[in-house]
Image (tube, rainbow, N blue to C red):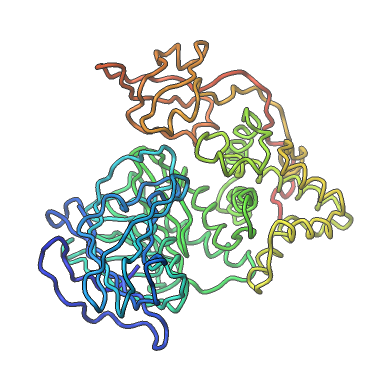
Length: 570
């Protein structure tokens, strides 16, 4: 995000903005400058000083001047913790009133001027970097964090931006001098200082930023090319080798999907103390997380998944995560397999992980329309768009391939959504249904309606090619043994504990306070993964480890079928 920041806040020396490079003449211009600070070069970054300038758009007391989410996708931002917040315009200091939206998945804080705004607006504040554990339970890794002598975070977690709804030409500048001689900056829009053409300021919220003594990867001979990666510190695996694999898959996907472009694509790696192994897609980029036990192979499906988002995107309108996430899960194993970059065993492991989690999910029949409102309260709800969407697409793919000639597949439908978006045509759920009607008639439309209503999507035995067959296995359901919302409350107090549960048998008790957030999404598919809760009971603290499993139920899996021909779903 934004313009060369040479201004230290909170009474420290101010220096002039210089050499920033303006946006194109005639556009409203937004300049954002970022100056990370550390107690000592190579040490933890303690803050980012932010300096923002833009021309007022006729804002009066009734119109918000600035906006920053207080809660951004369940992440607490710096809106309530920033210091040195100062706003001025051509007439001098500008007093503001604050309006906060009620708590929710996203809840904005907006600042309204107490008088008419005139001329250039300048906003300055310090965004603290604390590495605090997420207070609201499961959340994407958007927050500002420091590691390896640097800092990283999503713009939506720390940038207070114009709220007038205008498009701006944007200049983004960094001053990383406080981070040492080897420090540099990178982000979703490119390395170092960048200039962006006119567009929504929301681009900055959906971008990722990293600064410090960066480790970098770029394919040999492609300096300045499309693919690049950056990380801070030393991951517990060979990051260069993993990023080389990712670069090759990115190039293969670029040939596979239609309507590609030449936009740069960056992968950022970051330590995650709570839910390592996941990640989040950002503009032209992806953030993948790890912890001290992460293996490179375990990240490959995550990297493939998020790169699929770059091309496949989603459908317009609400409640369509089944498409964007389902498509990404469907292709996260299929495309690396087609490309010869994983073997059949890795393909089956990934497929069966999804299948085990889906078919044992006690909330498997939750209607699609209920998922968004309950997304963060229960991990079993949260994974449904991923698992159900992928199984639905596998069912569709099998139906399409059965048609006379067998020349088409679900690829063709996904490609049509991509081309529609590329050509500026609307593509929402109704558009998807029309594609189904043209491809499969009312059978396709009925299947889609059933999926949206929560019907179980069971692919046929040969849905993944003649080399694999469907078999039934008994698994224990994922079951915490208490109300899942207990882990997302503040404070996290155990409620609704089942005395017959594994958690109770391990020593957990009603009213215990969970002190440290814990990951849940990834362990649902692992029958043997235990969960450890650090709890406080009165004046005592306990570490309670248990297997979060309940009743045994049958679930579908796939295994080798002994076929000796070509296995791939081309």
